[in-house]
Every structure is written in C-alpha cells, then in structure tokens.
Amino acid sequence: MEVGSGLISRARVPERHVALIHPVDLPVLLVEAAQSALSPTLTVSVPARDDCKTLDVFSGVLSRLARANIPRDGAVVGLGGGAATDLAGFVAASYLRGVAFYTMPTTLLGMVDAAVGGKTGVNLPEGKNLVGAFWPPRAVWCDTDVLATLPPAVFAEGAAEAYKHGLIADPALLPRVLSPDFRPGGSNLEDTLADAIAVKAGVVTRDLTERGERAFLNFGHTLAHALEAFTDHGVTHGEAVGYGMHYAARLSRALGGADLTGHTLAFLGWQRPRPLPPLTFEDVWPYMARDKKADAEGVRFVLLHDLARPYLARVPGEVLRREFAGWREEVETVSR
Ligand SMILES: O=C(O)C(=O)C[C@@H](O)[C@H](O)[C@H](O)COP(=O)(O)O
Image (cartoon, rainbow, N blue to C red; front, top):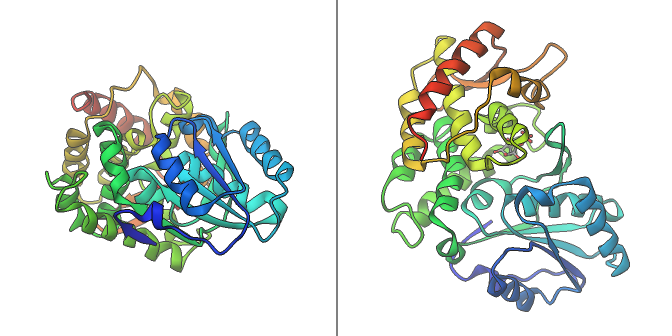
C-alpha cells in the first residue's frame, strides 16, 4: 500500500501480461499514465460507476482476457473508483481460477476503502455485492495527485468511509476529516488518508474473510446498500454510507449506546449529500433483509456502544421502523 504523489506513473508489476481495466469516463491522461507505466497487453474500458458491476459486464471482460490470451501468470490491474476496482478484482479472482491483482484507486472512496482488503464482486438486481470473492490486491497505489481532478461532491462522498473508520476505530480521525485542510492539496490530506487506510488495512490483515471483526467495517452499510439497490444506484455509495451511518447511530442509541448522532449529523452537514427520493421502510426492508451479515436467525446490524466500540446486534422490528421514521425526518434537514 503506497500513498503519495505521482504513483501511477511509477507503478511496476513483475507480470509480463497485464490487463488494465478502467471506467470509460476516467480522464484519458490517467489511462495513458497507467498504460505507459505498465505496458498492458490489453486495456478494457467498462461502464462508469456501478453500471460496470453486473454479471454481463463481468462475463464480457473475462472473454476479452481469454481472447487476448492473458496467461495464468498474468495480472489484472484495476484503475478507477470503487466500482471498477471491485469488478477488476472479481475478474482477477475468477479468470483461470485466479491471477495476480493490483489496484490504482482514483477516488477518495476507492483509496480509503474499496481498493484495500480484497472484497471484490458485482451486484445483482436483488442487492449490492451479492456475488464476489475475497481476492486481495498484491499492491495498492493511492496516487494523491488524482484527487485534485475530482469534483468536490465526489471527494466529499468518499470521505464517508474515512469518517466511518473514525467512528468504529480511531476517533481522532473525526475532526481531521471535517477539517478544512482535508481536501485535495490540503496539508491534512496525506496523513489523514494514510491513517484512515491503516484502520482498514489492520482489520483485513487480522480477518480477511470476515469471520469476526471485519464485519465492523460494515457500519452504516445495511441501510446504505438498501438505498443504493432500491434507487438503482441513483444514490451513490458514499452518500448512502453517510445516510446509513446516521441510521446506525440512531439504532445504537435506541439500544442503550452512547448518543453519537451529533457526529453522524455533523458528517452529513459537511458532506451535503443529494436529497433522497421518497422512500418508505417497506421499500428498503427487503434489501436490508438480504444483507450479508444476516445469519440463520436474521439480520444483524453493526452498532456502537460508544466511539470505537462496535458490536453486532439484532434489532427488534419496531425499533427499526421507529428509528427509520425519525431518521427520514432528520436527514431531510442536512441534504443539499
Ligand atoms: O471491507 C469491508 O469488509 C467492508 O465492509 C467495507 C465496506 O465499506 C465496503 O463497502 C464493502 O465492500 C462492503 O462489503 P459487503 O460485504 O457489505 O458487500
């Protein structure tokens, strides 16, 4: 894992045959920088954002690798945001039963979260990330220069995952993420980014396949994934995580935990997500019920006893509904 300036142009891999996968809307200069660093055998452009995370796109990319005769000792490099690196990783995990995988995240969200830890996969109409594999990248190059090319809303979106790492593990990150210096080119950017990534890297090193503490990285994601799936990705992942963390903070308080809703509302006030479309508990519940943390006895949420004290719990149906109603009213006051 490297964080710093100019990393894409300096990246090197030992494999001779490389397939470079990137979203179609990525700036050409970034694609060219990666191409001149890696001399890929094949470059595949895929639809932007979650439109690339489908079984159809996945199968089309696999065919491209096969037709280009990428061998088993070849590599797949994912260049782009979280969706593109999730897809690229699943291609790497599946093609010829697994080839080397590397990531070059180009969004804040990708750097702090998606490109690290090897959760790869695609969505189904029934829900987010329902198909995939744990396939860790051999290296991750977080080139901070690219963050300056992001629209401010996309940067703010990605900060949700860094803030989440503050809530579940490292509260010192909370004011650092909201500080005016946490911005592209800001004095606080590289250190805060490195510390937020360190939270996730530590967790996945100890529990790659989510037998235990890795589940805590899913704080806010039960509702977040449901919002994304119900709106067919009209709500972006970072916006959904911001909204979902506030719901999880309300549930935590309802079950007797510390009141951390001031933190989650402060984040939403900083992030200014787009307003949600009209939606009811009944709309999102079927998606929440398919959450991957569910076991034979039903859905489990990541909650917080307090800052940095996460736990998994089942929440009674009446609490889920009541807090949903309160959450819905409250988040309307903070959206753009
Ligand atoms: O890496 C993890 O583990 C996480 O839960 C981090 C999440 O922020 C990330 O969005 C992850 O891909 C979601 O995983 P899922 O298992 O809920 O699909």
